[in-house]
Length: 81
Image (cartoon, rainbow, N blue to C red; front, side):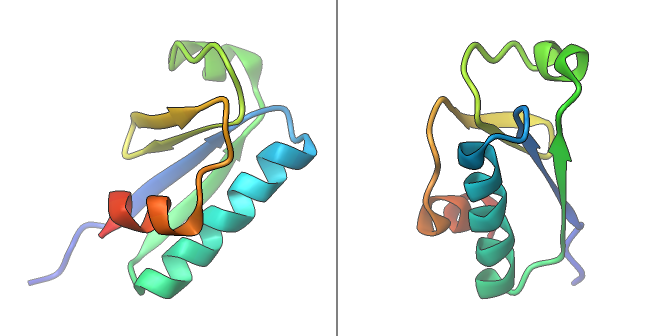
């Protein structure tokens, strides 16, 4: 059975915290061995569609999993496996 590829979106302006969250997401994907597309969304209009009040935020398959913090690699792995 082939699993559907995950879409992970990092929501934020591109600040150091956003970049760290993106790095953690990419590391989680590699460690978990799953197929995933990691996208960094910097467009404020697109970010506002997720109704997040604080960045950085992370969404997996369109569902916001955390906002206002840098999620750990282990946390992200739990959301994508």
